[in-house]
Length: 145
Ligand code: CDP
Ligand code: MG
Image (cartoon, rainbow, N blue to C red; front, side, top):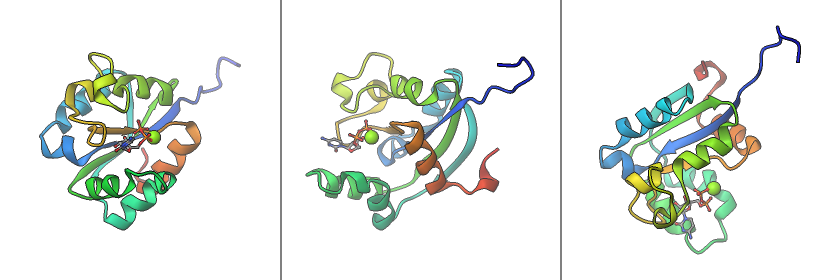
């Protein structure tokens, strides 16, 4: 790569879910994310209607937990963010830990703040492609810095 060419970092998308928000963990979670080297590209507090939560998790529509997931995700405020860092998707999945907090590594965000498999404090995109789709679900181009 020519020395002058700017290296594009990868981006991922996250949500602090309604459980973590309601329990007052948003500040602590954002602090962990920033100190782990992720740059905030976009950030907002918002909430999902049941229809919007259903759309966001449409890939899980046929799963038995879909109804509960939609109900949970539309229960209250969330914080949505686009994050940038080298290897962002994989590194962020490592930082949040396994889907089930009981199986998450010590020190991960889900181990620290999540109560159950369903109510697990935080979302992280699973691929570069989905990171882009999910970021665009919440943010316009003008909101990305
Ligand atoms: O969020 P993650 O990518 O780790 O897991 P997922 O398999 O994409 O599932 C999406 C979300 O559905 C999880 O984060 C949980 O909130 C919920 N879920 C659930 O309630 N029960 C399961 N057996 C699996 C997932
Ligand atoms: Mg997932």
